[in-house]
Amino acid sequence: MGNDVFQINLDTDVLDILRNKVNEEQNISYNKTNGKHRAWDKICAIMDRLDDTVYFLNELKLNTGKYKRSAFDFYGFMNNASVVLDCIKELAKIFDVPDEKIKKSTEIFKQLGSDGEGSDEKYFEYLRSLCAVHPVGTNRHKRYQANDFECSPYVVWNNREIWQDDCDIYAVVYTSKDGESNKRVQIYISQIFEYLKTRLEFVTEITDEIDQYQKQVISDFKKRPIKTEKEFDNYIDYLRNLDKELNERYGSDCYYPFDYIINLFELKVSNPQNQIKMNLYLNALKYAIEFEHNRMQNMSYEGFENNGLLFLERNIETSLYIELYSPRSGSEEQRRYHYNLEKISYLSYDTGYSNKQWAYNQLNGAKIFLEKYVSFEGATGDFEHYALVKLALYLDCLDNKCLINRNIPNDLKYRKGLLSDDELKELIPVK
Image (tube, rainbow, N blue to C red; front, side, top):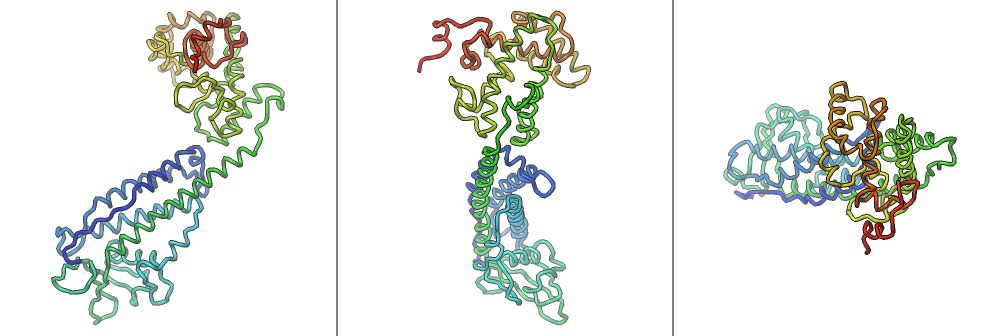
């Protein structure tokens, strides 16, 4: 009113809670569909737009005196407020959240229109169309127009220089009726602000619905048994089924797929001495995969039965299977050859001739470390070289204080030699 400066204060906490909830079970959110397509990109775009646009609106000051006739600050507010509203409506649609309550509400603007079917949503859309989007021809809001079309030459702040009404801003309107004088649509900023705030508050209901959706998906997967190893003729078929389950439960882009593990179990190692050592690594993987099976069945990394970790010192989400997938001892030597080991990964998939050659160069540079555990003599093919490097890293873990060494059973199925009682005490800290 008068020369008042207006600035909205939208609650950004609801957006933080929304993002945290979406990411809490990201694999489920990632696989949510929207019609025929995956909705993940749209969900991310909505969350980013909401964050940025709400922050912009909170910083925007209206009626500062900068605009004397056309209220460009108000145009900007209405257009960006509409972005927020559209994002919220689309997010509700993606997660099947009923929004009739906010679509039919009338308590803010109290504008039912000529047919009595108006709503707060419809009136806001009329104001946005008239003021900011279609000022030279608004014709889709008949209940608020009483004309074939309306034109708005300008929207002006009511600083009581011309009119003495109590509204904050006017939309000056020319109508389609010849000879009829223009009209002024009175707009109250408090109503605009309240409307946007109530719609942003609806994000809380969407977040609650996302939580219920995630819980239902998890519950459905828990109820669906994953076939056990005994139900297959061979271990490779069992792994292929686990990979299928992994894709269905966590998506095709999930980390630590079973394709590398399948290739490892199918590999015929050229050197018999390497094969003996490789069997230790394969047995360790089979041991860990038992827990990975449980983790996928229970949809949780928590607890020994799901992660295979009796001794977990780091406060991170991991499992024995994940650790064995990429063995890391943390030893000084492994750190020294970090770059070499990173580039050797080019041998695990089709990366092109130049990358493969660079990988072999790095492998040669790290052999002084790796050949403490394996021999590359007679090795054939890119994958066998890569697998031998992984084997060497596993054996290096068994020589160092690390997560793998603490959690692999003290059994000759997995180790070159048994640990003594003193070695076990030194390896595993007493709680």
